[in-house]
Amino acid sequence: MSALFTQIFVAVIVVSLAIRVWLGLRHIRHIQQHRQQVPAAFNQTISLEAHQRAADYTTAKVKLRLNETVVESVILLALTLGGVLQMLDQAWQQWLPAHEIIRGALVICSAMLISGAATLPFDYIQTFNVDEKFGFNKMSRSMFFGDLIKHTIVGLLLGGPILFIALWLMQGAGDWWWLYLWLIWSAFNLFMLAVYPIWIAPLFNKFTPMQDQSLKARIEALLQKCGFASQGLFVMDGSTRSGHGNAYFTGFGKNKRVVFFDTLLEKLSADEIEAVLAHELGHFKHQHVIKRIIMMFGLSLLGLALLGYLIKQEWFFTGLGVAEASNHMALLLFVLVSPVFMFILRPVLAAYSRTNEFEADHYAAQQSRPQFLIDALVKLYRDNASTLTPDPLHSAFYDSHPPASLRIAKLQTYA
Ligand SMILES: [Zn+2]
Image (tube, rainbow, N blue to C red):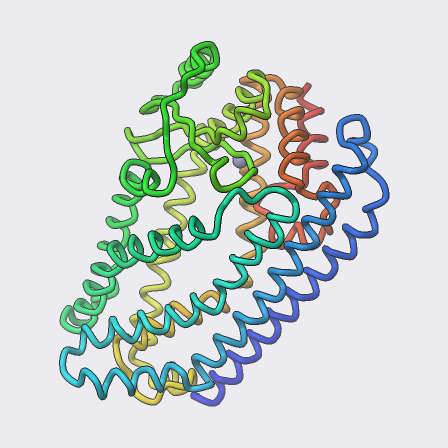
């Protein structure tokens, strides 16, 4: 069984890597083939220069992410079958033979550190080579590393206690530990959704109440018309890090806030801002957010139940290059390896997300006007240098949002 599981694991890694590389190369080829001409639907609104900039930016990003995917797969194989996890486990075993829970947490942290360090260079290159070259990066190097340190500290402060609780439950809570852990994990996630906008997000960005009174009045009227209660309108200084614009809702229950990137407010007219907000409200009206949360909770319950089974199977450990079964290794292997097997779900989740986007667009077309959302989308595609000509298969597999041409074509039917 152990050898069979190893073979399945390697086969899934190789096949999913091959699919990713194939899709990425298709995407690049498709974009380059359409680089010389702006698609007919956009030739009034997007210049050839902007179109080519988007093609080159997307190509550079895809190439970088392809390299990252290859490195990630190699690192995963090195950690598991290459014996790195086994070495880490033994090293900590020698230094800290007692204190099983603390040792387990340290093994997990060391492994996370290694895999995080391996992908860090790609984020660095994305920011200081790719985004920089296309004029999107506003970050200094000290800010980049400052963010990294802050993220690590916040991650340790929030993740550390959860990790200890998990290992403690696995050790002492009996056969149903995974169910207790799921309850605590779900409660923790709901708590995070509620406090994130108030406690965590301000560590990284400044949020100021919206100043523009006439815009504020229009937005509040729209919120009221749609029956949406929020805890205020905020502008986020997205421009300190990047030139990309966005708008979103954050928080949960009564703590909901509407947040606009300052970059978005600069670029769009009041009508267009309203249309973008109406789209976001559409997600709430159709309860996409709640559905997504329920789906995630369902998936994590299934995952933890599966882990409850796997932890008792010797082949799960030996098949992944770990000689001795333990609670922390079960948890670590599961976190590292399950995304590889979840890869097949990717196109399903992406397709579901795209149907949600169409529903939100439809709602926005009713509350605002289709043309305002079309104008906003064109500007956002242009200013974010997003490609208008993605490879259809790549888009079907990965994209959470439908291609601009399809969204706009659909919006035009509502006009
Ligand atoms: Zn949306």
